[in-house]
Length: 133
Image (cartoon, rainbow, N blue to C red; front, side):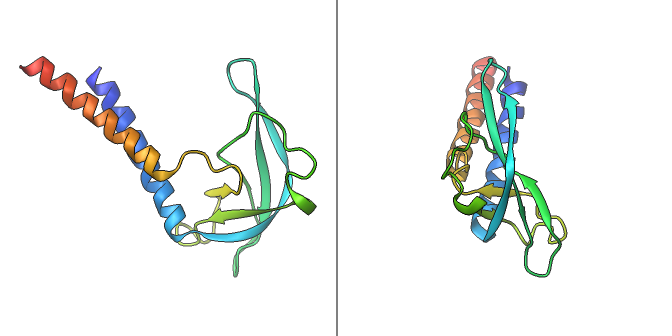
């Protein structure tokens, strides 16, 4: 049980670091909306992830999919003129900045993810302390 909670905690900590890095040094750029990929959410419902295209300054054209989704398709007016703002990290890999956040599809913030990691680590400490004492 402790091992599982520890692994989940490490995963959440890594995700929190990535989100914090993206939001602290990322840059906003206008992107073209190419469409939305429909996927099964595993419970019989659908989820929709926008697919966008943008060209960072001095870079090559990037086509990327939002890692976050909504449970309904983007409707008319969701993306005015098929454009949307995208946050990307130019310092992570300038040649391949696919790590993005699409405005309106941002998911959990870095602080919530970090708190989740701390709670999981706290549970590991609690379980281990109960086993030892």
